[in-house]
Image 1 (tube, one colour):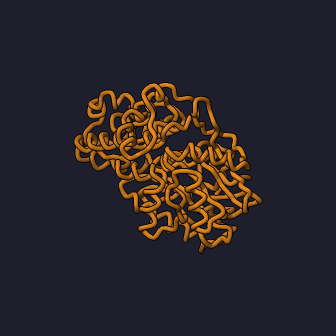
Image 2 (cartoon, rainbow, N blue to C red):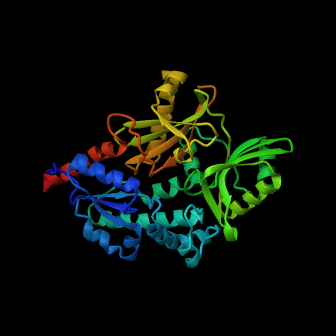
Image 3 (cartoon, rainbow, N blue to C red):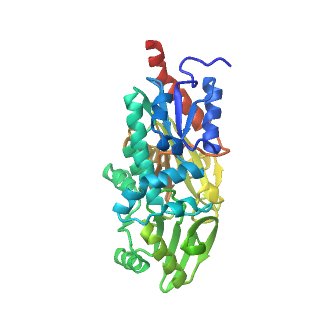
Amino acid sequence: MTAPPGGAPGRIVVLGAGAGPRHDSFVAACVDRLGGAPASLAWDRFLADPDRLAAMLRPGGYLRIDTPDQQPGPIAALYRAGRDAAAAAGFETLSDSRIDGLAAGEIGSPAQLAFGLGAATARAEATARACGGQVSTSAADVACAFDKAAARDRLAAAGVPVPFALAAPESFDDLVAAMEAAGLSRVFVKLRHGSAAAGMIALARQGDRWIATTTAVDGEGGRILASRNLRRLTDRGDLARLVDRLAPLGLHVERWLPKIGIDGRVADVRLVMLDDGSIHPVLRTSRHPITNLHLGGDRAPVDALVRRIGDAAWQSVLASARSAACRFADSHVLGLDIAVLADGRRHAVLEANIFGDFVKDFTPGARSPHAAQLDRIAARLEPDRAAT
Protein backbone atom coordinates (compact mmCIF):
# COMPACT_ATOMS: atom_id res chain seq x y z
CA MET A 1 0.00 0.00 0.00
CA THR A 2 1.27 3.47 -0.84
CA ALA A 3 1.24 5.87 2.11
CA PRO A 4 -1.09 8.83 1.61
CA PRO A 5 0.03 12.39 2.36
CA GLY A 6 0.92 12.77 6.03
CA GLY A 7 1.19 9.02 6.44
CA ALA A 8 2.74 7.14 9.33
CA PRO A 9 6.17 6.05 8.06
CA GLY A 10 8.80 8.37 9.46
CA ARG A 11 6.22 10.87 10.70
CA ILE A 12 4.69 9.30 13.82
CA VAL A 13 6.58 7.99 16.85
CA VAL A 14 4.82 6.03 19.61
CA LEU A 15 6.53 6.24 23.00
CA GLY A 16 5.01 3.64 25.29
CA ALA A 17 4.97 -0.09 25.94
CA GLY A 18 6.57 -1.15 22.67
CA ALA A 19 4.29 -4.21 22.59
CA GLY A 20 0.92 -5.46 23.79
CA PRO A 21 -2.71 -5.23 22.67
CA ARG A 22 -3.17 -1.44 22.79
CA HIS A 23 0.20 -0.84 21.08
CA ASP A 24 -0.67 -3.36 18.38
CA SER A 25 -4.13 -1.85 17.91
CA PHE A 26 -2.69 1.61 17.24
CA VAL A 27 -0.05 0.21 14.87
CA ALA A 28 -2.73 -1.71 12.96
CA ALA A 29 -4.81 1.47 12.70
CA CYS A 30 -1.75 3.31 11.32
CA VAL A 31 -1.24 0.66 8.67
CA ASP A 32 -4.92 0.64 7.75
CA ARG A 33 -5.55 4.40 7.73
CA LEU A 34 -2.15 5.83 6.78
CA GLY A 35 -0.40 3.10 4.86
CA GLY A 36 2.43 2.16 7.24
CA ALA A 37 3.46 1.46 10.79
CA PRO A 38 4.74 4.22 13.09
CA ALA A 39 8.15 4.20 14.68
CA SER A 40 7.98 2.74 18.18
CA LEU A 41 10.10 3.39 21.26
CA ALA A 42 9.59 1.74 24.65
CA TRP A 43 9.90 3.77 27.85
CA ASP A 44 12.89 1.82 29.13
CA ARG A 45 14.88 2.38 25.94
CA PHE A 46 13.99 6.08 25.99
CA LEU A 47 15.02 6.56 29.60
CA ALA A 48 18.28 4.66 29.01
CA ASP A 49 19.13 6.95 26.07
CA PRO A 50 16.78 9.97 25.68
CA ASP A 51 18.61 11.03 22.50
CA ARG A 52 16.97 8.08 20.74
CA LEU A 53 13.72 10.03 20.54
CA ALA A 54 15.32 13.10 18.98
CA ALA A 55 16.92 10.88 16.36
CA MET A 56 13.63 9.16 15.53
CA LEU A 57 11.28 12.16 15.45
CA ARG A 58 11.42 14.20 12.27
CA PRO A 59 10.82 17.97 12.45
CA GLY A 60 7.08 18.55 12.31
CA GLY A 61 6.40 14.93 13.22
CA TYR A 62 3.94 13.60 15.78
CA LEU A 63 4.78 12.02 19.14
CA ARG A 64 2.13 9.78 20.67
CA ILE A 65 2.70 9.35 24.41
CA ASP A 66 1.27 6.05 25.64
CA THR A 67 1.09 3.88 28.73
CA PRO A 68 3.70 1.23 29.63
CA ASP A 69 0.75 -1.15 29.73
CA GLN A 70 1.82 -4.49 31.26
CA GLN A 71 5.35 -4.58 29.84
CA PRO A 72 7.92 -5.32 32.61
CA GLY A 73 10.85 -3.37 31.14
CA PRO A 74 9.04 -0.05 30.63
CA ILE A 75 7.29 -0.38 34.00
CA ALA A 76 10.56 -0.99 35.85
CA ALA A 77 12.23 1.99 34.17
CA LEU A 78 9.36 4.30 35.08
CA TYR A 79 9.37 3.04 38.67
CA ARG A 80 13.03 3.97 38.98
CA ALA A 81 12.39 7.39 37.44
CA GLY A 82 9.67 8.14 40.02
CA ARG A 83 11.19 6.86 43.25
CA ASP A 84 12.68 10.09 44.64
CA ALA A 85 9.65 12.27 43.87
CA ALA A 86 7.19 9.75 45.32
CA ALA A 87 9.26 9.35 48.48
CA ALA A 88 9.52 13.13 48.88
CA ALA A 89 5.73 13.33 48.63
CA GLY A 90 5.35 10.80 51.45
CA PHE A 91 4.29 7.70 49.51
CA GLU A 92 5.62 4.20 50.02
CA THR A 93 8.19 3.32 47.35
CA LEU A 94 9.93 0.22 46.04
CA SER A 95 13.63 -0.57 46.10
CA ASP A 96 15.44 -1.76 42.97
CA SER A 97 15.21 -5.35 44.15
CA ARG A 98 11.46 -5.02 44.73
CA ILE A 99 11.04 -3.44 41.30
CA ASP A 100 12.96 -6.28 39.67
CA GLY A 101 10.87 -8.80 41.60
CA LEU A 102 7.44 -7.37 40.85
CA ALA A 103 4.99 -10.21 40.36
CA ALA A 104 2.28 -10.26 37.73
CA GLY A 105 -0.68 -8.28 39.04
CA GLU A 106 1.23 -6.80 41.97
CA ILE A 107 0.03 -3.31 42.91
CA GLY A 108 3.51 -2.16 43.92
CA SER A 109 3.63 1.61 44.42
CA PRO A 110 1.20 3.33 42.02
CA ALA A 111 2.40 6.77 43.14
CA GLN A 112 5.99 5.90 42.28
CA LEU A 113 4.96 4.71 38.82
CA ALA A 114 2.82 7.81 38.26
CA PHE A 115 5.60 10.17 39.29
CA GLY A 116 7.99 8.34 36.99
CA LEU A 117 5.59 8.54 34.08
CA GLY A 118 5.06 12.25 34.68
CA ALA A 119 8.80 12.95 34.77
CA ALA A 120 9.50 10.83 31.70
CA THR A 121 6.66 12.47 29.79
CA ALA A 122 8.06 15.91 30.64
CA ARG A 123 11.42 14.90 29.20
CA ALA A 124 9.86 13.44 26.05
CA GLU A 125 7.60 16.46 25.59
CA ALA A 126 10.57 18.83 25.80
CA THR A 127 12.49 16.74 23.27
CA ALA A 128 9.60 16.71 20.83
CA ARG A 129 9.03 20.45 21.13
CA ALA A 130 12.73 21.09 20.53
CA CYS A 131 12.45 19.01 17.35
CA GLY A 132 9.47 21.04 16.19
CA GLY A 133 7.19 18.09 16.75
CA GLN A 134 3.61 17.81 17.95
CA VAL A 135 2.74 15.87 21.11
CA SER A 136 -0.44 13.97 21.94
CA THR A 137 -0.53 15.20 25.55
CA SER A 138 1.45 17.12 28.15
CA ALA A 139 3.29 16.14 31.30
CA ALA A 140 0.93 18.35 33.31
CA ASP A 141 -2.15 16.56 31.95
CA VAL A 142 -0.60 13.13 32.51
CA ALA A 143 0.34 13.97 36.11
CA CYS A 144 -3.14 15.29 36.84
CA ALA A 145 -5.04 12.43 35.23
CA PHE A 146 -2.96 9.84 37.12
CA ASP A 147 -3.79 11.56 40.41
CA LYS A 148 -7.49 11.02 41.20
CA ALA A 149 -7.59 13.76 43.82
CA ALA A 150 -5.95 16.31 41.51
CA ALA A 151 -8.18 15.36 38.58
CA ARG A 152 -11.32 15.60 40.70
CA ASP A 153 -10.29 19.03 41.98
CA ARG A 154 -9.50 20.26 38.45
CA LEU A 155 -12.91 19.16 37.20
CA ALA A 156 -14.80 20.45 40.24
CA ALA A 157 -13.18 23.87 39.79
CA ALA A 158 -14.67 23.97 36.28
CA GLY A 159 -18.15 23.13 37.54
CA VAL A 160 -18.07 19.54 36.25
CA PRO A 161 -20.17 17.25 38.48
CA VAL A 162 -17.91 14.89 40.46
CA PRO A 163 -18.44 12.68 43.52
CA PHE A 164 -18.01 14.14 46.99
CA ALA A 165 -14.58 13.16 48.34
CA LEU A 166 -13.21 12.68 51.85
CA ALA A 167 -9.75 13.66 53.01
CA ALA A 168 -7.23 10.89 52.35
CA PRO A 169 -7.26 8.53 55.37
CA GLU A 170 -4.02 7.25 56.86
CA SER A 171 -5.67 4.21 58.44
CA PHE A 172 -8.95 2.34 58.71
CA ASP A 173 -9.78 4.21 61.90
CA ASP A 174 -9.27 7.50 60.02
CA LEU A 175 -11.61 6.26 57.31
CA VAL A 176 -14.32 5.29 59.78
CA ALA A 177 -14.09 8.65 61.53
CA ALA A 178 -14.27 10.55 58.22
CA MET A 179 -17.28 8.54 57.05
CA GLU A 180 -19.09 9.21 60.33
CA ALA A 181 -18.29 12.92 60.21
CA ALA A 182 -19.61 13.18 56.65
CA GLY A 183 -22.65 11.02 57.34
CA LEU A 184 -21.64 8.45 54.72
CA SER A 185 -22.35 4.75 55.01
CA ARG A 186 -21.16 3.78 51.48
CA VAL A 187 -17.88 4.82 49.86
CA PHE A 188 -15.43 3.75 47.19
CA VAL A 189 -11.87 3.50 48.49
CA LYS A 190 -9.39 3.81 45.63
CA LEU A 191 -5.66 4.06 45.30
CA ARG A 192 -4.99 7.72 44.57
CA HIS A 193 -2.70 7.07 41.61
CA GLY A 194 -2.87 4.77 38.64
CA SER A 195 -5.52 2.28 37.59
CA ALA A 196 -8.94 2.94 39.09
CA ALA A 197 -9.68 -0.72 39.69
CA ALA A 198 -6.37 -1.81 41.24
CA GLY A 199 -6.92 -2.25 44.96
CA MET A 200 -10.37 -0.68 44.84
CA ILE A 201 -12.80 -1.32 47.69
CA ALA A 202 -16.55 -0.78 47.38
CA LEU A 203 -17.43 -0.39 51.04
CA ALA A 204 -20.82 -0.34 52.74
CA ARG A 205 -21.64 -0.08 56.45
CA GLN A 206 -24.87 -0.96 58.22
CA GLY A 207 -24.41 -0.31 61.92
CA ASP A 208 -21.75 -2.74 63.06
CA ARG A 209 -21.91 -4.71 59.80
CA TRP A 210 -19.33 -4.08 57.07
CA ILE A 211 -19.59 -5.40 53.52
CA ALA A 212 -16.81 -4.80 51.01
CA THR A 213 -16.14 -5.88 47.43
CA THR A 214 -12.50 -5.54 46.47
CA THR A 215 -9.92 -6.36 43.82
CA ALA A 216 -7.10 -6.47 46.40
CA VAL A 217 -5.60 -9.78 47.51
CA ASP A 218 -2.86 -10.38 50.08
CA GLY A 219 0.29 -11.85 48.60
CA GLU A 220 3.49 -13.21 50.13
CA GLY A 221 5.86 -10.94 52.01
CA GLY A 222 3.34 -8.15 52.53
CA ARG A 223 2.69 -7.75 48.82
CA ILE A 224 -0.75 -6.69 47.57
CA LEU A 225 -2.06 -8.06 44.30
CA ALA A 226 -4.82 -6.71 42.06
CA SER A 227 -7.03 -9.68 41.29
CA ARG A 228 -9.46 -10.06 38.41
CA ASN A 229 -11.61 -12.19 40.70
CA LEU A 230 -13.47 -9.90 43.07
CA ARG A 231 -13.68 -11.00 46.67
CA ARG A 232 -16.11 -10.11 49.42
CA LEU A 233 -15.06 -9.10 52.93
CA THR A 234 -17.42 -8.96 55.89
CA ASP A 235 -14.98 -9.20 58.79
CA ARG A 236 -14.08 -5.76 60.17
CA GLY A 237 -10.62 -6.93 61.17
CA ASP A 238 -9.80 -8.18 57.67
CA LEU A 239 -11.07 -4.95 56.18
CA ALA A 240 -9.07 -2.84 58.64
CA ARG A 241 -5.88 -4.72 57.83
CA LEU A 242 -6.43 -4.21 54.11
CA VAL A 243 -7.07 -0.46 54.39
CA ASP A 244 -4.11 -0.05 56.76
CA ARG A 245 -1.91 -1.83 54.22
CA LEU A 246 -3.11 0.27 51.28
CA ALA A 247 -3.01 3.63 53.09
CA PRO A 248 0.78 4.22 52.76
CA LEU A 249 0.38 3.91 48.99
CA GLY A 250 -2.03 6.87 48.99
CA LEU A 251 -5.83 6.62 49.07
CA HIS A 252 -8.69 8.54 47.50
CA VAL A 253 -12.17 8.05 49.00
CA GLU A 254 -15.42 9.07 47.30
CA ARG A 255 -19.11 8.87 48.07
CA TRP A 256 -20.56 5.70 46.55
CA LEU A 257 -23.00 7.01 43.97
CA PRO A 258 -26.02 4.82 43.15
CA LYS A 259 -25.59 4.05 39.44
CA ILE A 260 -28.45 3.51 37.06
CA GLY A 261 -29.50 -0.04 36.22
CA ILE A 262 -29.84 -1.41 32.70
CA ASP A 263 -31.60 -4.76 32.34
CA GLY A 264 -30.92 -5.58 35.98
CA ARG A 265 -27.22 -4.72 35.79
CA VAL A 266 -25.23 -1.78 37.19
CA ALA A 267 -24.21 0.54 34.37
CA ASP A 268 -21.89 3.43 33.61
CA VAL A 269 -20.34 4.79 30.43
CA ARG A 270 -16.82 5.27 29.04
CA LEU A 271 -16.58 8.21 26.65
CA VAL A 272 -13.50 8.47 24.44
CA MET A 273 -13.17 12.18 23.64
CA LEU A 274 -11.16 13.41 20.65
CA ASP A 275 -9.98 16.99 20.35
CA ASP A 276 -12.10 17.53 17.22
CA GLY A 277 -15.18 17.25 19.43
CA SER A 278 -16.10 13.71 18.39
CA ILE A 279 -17.17 11.31 21.12
CA HIS A 280 -17.01 7.51 21.12
CA PRO A 281 -19.28 6.12 23.89
CA VAL A 282 -19.24 2.61 25.34
CA LEU A 283 -21.82 1.38 27.84
CA ARG A 284 -20.36 -0.81 30.59
CA THR A 285 -22.62 -3.08 32.64
CA SER A 286 -21.90 -5.47 35.50
CA ARG A 287 -23.60 -7.63 38.12
CA HIS A 288 -21.46 -6.05 40.84
CA PRO A 289 -20.57 -2.43 41.72
CA ILE A 290 -17.28 -2.39 39.75
CA THR A 291 -17.92 -2.16 36.00
CA ASN A 292 -14.37 -2.31 34.61
CA LEU A 293 -14.29 -4.51 31.54
CA HIS A 294 -11.31 -6.60 32.66
CA LEU A 295 -13.23 -7.44 35.85
CA GLY A 296 -16.17 -9.01 34.09
CA GLY A 297 -18.03 -5.95 32.91
CA ASP A 298 -19.73 -6.21 29.52
CA ARG A 299 -19.48 -3.75 26.63
CA ALA A 300 -22.59 -2.60 24.80
CA PRO A 301 -23.80 0.23 22.54
CA VAL A 302 -24.89 3.26 24.50
CA ASP A 303 -28.38 3.28 22.96
CA ALA A 304 -29.90 1.37 25.88
CA LEU A 305 -28.76 4.08 28.30
CA VAL A 306 -30.00 6.91 26.08
CA ARG A 307 -33.43 5.25 25.79
CA ARG A 308 -33.50 4.76 29.54
CA ILE A 309 -32.70 8.38 30.52
CA GLY A 310 -33.95 10.33 27.48
CA ASP A 311 -32.17 12.67 25.11
CA ALA A 312 -32.15 15.72 27.40
CA ALA A 313 -30.33 13.85 30.19
CA TRP A 314 -27.93 12.33 27.67
CA GLN A 315 -27.10 15.73 26.21
CA SER A 316 -26.35 16.90 29.74
CA VAL A 317 -23.88 14.00 30.11
CA LEU A 318 -22.20 14.99 26.85
CA ALA A 319 -22.02 18.63 27.93
CA SER A 320 -20.22 17.61 31.13
CA ALA A 321 -17.87 15.41 29.12
CA ARG A 322 -16.99 18.27 26.79
CA SER A 323 -16.42 20.56 29.74
CA ALA A 324 -14.16 17.96 31.35
CA ALA A 325 -12.19 17.50 28.13
CA CYS A 326 -11.58 21.25 28.00
CA ARG A 327 -9.78 20.95 31.33
CA PHE A 328 -7.26 18.65 29.62
CA ALA A 329 -6.79 20.90 26.62
CA ASP A 330 -3.23 19.72 25.90
CA SER A 331 -4.44 16.16 25.32
CA HIS A 332 -5.64 15.07 21.91
CA VAL A 333 -7.67 12.21 23.38
CA LEU A 334 -9.22 11.60 26.79
CA GLY A 335 -11.18 8.73 28.30
CA LEU A 336 -13.89 9.68 30.77
CA ASP A 337 -15.87 7.32 33.00
CA ILE A 338 -19.25 8.81 33.85
CA ALA A 339 -21.94 7.45 36.14
CA VAL A 340 -25.57 8.30 35.49
CA LEU A 341 -27.32 8.12 38.84
CA ALA A 342 -30.24 5.85 39.57
CA ASP A 343 -32.76 8.68 39.12
CA GLY A 344 -31.71 8.96 35.46
CA ARG A 345 -31.32 12.73 35.70
CA ARG A 346 -28.04 13.38 37.52
CA HIS A 347 -24.57 12.20 36.65
CA ALA A 348 -20.95 12.54 37.76
CA VAL A 349 -17.54 12.17 36.14
CA LEU A 350 -15.72 9.39 37.99
CA GLU A 351 -12.36 9.16 36.21
CA ALA A 352 -10.29 11.00 33.61
CA ASN A 353 -7.80 8.83 31.74
CA ILE A 354 -5.26 10.24 29.29
CA PHE A 355 -4.76 6.71 27.96
CA GLY A 356 -8.42 5.73 27.96
CA ASP A 357 -8.75 5.38 24.19
CA PHE A 358 -8.41 1.60 23.89
CA VAL A 359 -11.57 -0.47 24.24
CA LYS A 360 -10.54 -4.01 23.43
CA ASP A 361 -12.67 -5.97 20.95
CA PHE A 362 -15.29 -3.23 20.64
CA THR A 363 -15.81 -0.46 18.10
CA PRO A 364 -18.39 2.07 19.33
CA GLY A 365 -19.26 3.48 15.90
CA ALA A 366 -18.20 3.37 12.27
CA ARG A 367 -14.53 3.82 13.23
CA SER A 368 -12.56 2.68 16.23
CA PRO A 369 -11.17 5.43 18.48
CA HIS A 370 -7.68 4.62 17.19
CA ALA A 371 -8.80 4.93 13.57
CA ALA A 372 -10.50 8.24 14.31
CA GLN A 373 -7.33 9.51 15.99
CA LEU A 374 -5.27 8.60 12.96
CA ASP A 375 -7.50 10.75 10.77
CA ARG A 376 -6.89 13.65 13.15
CA ILE A 377 -3.14 13.03 13.23
CA ALA A 378 -2.97 12.93 9.43
CA ALA A 379 -4.76 16.29 9.32
CA ARG A 380 -2.23 17.70 11.77
CA LEU A 381 0.67 16.48 9.68
CA GLU A 382 -0.76 17.60 6.35
CA PRO A 383 0.09 21.34 6.69
CA ASP A 384 3.70 20.48 7.45
CA ARG A 385 3.91 18.11 4.46
CA ALA A 386 2.52 20.82 2.19
CA ALA A 387 5.07 23.33 3.51
CA THR A 388 7.95 20.99 2.78
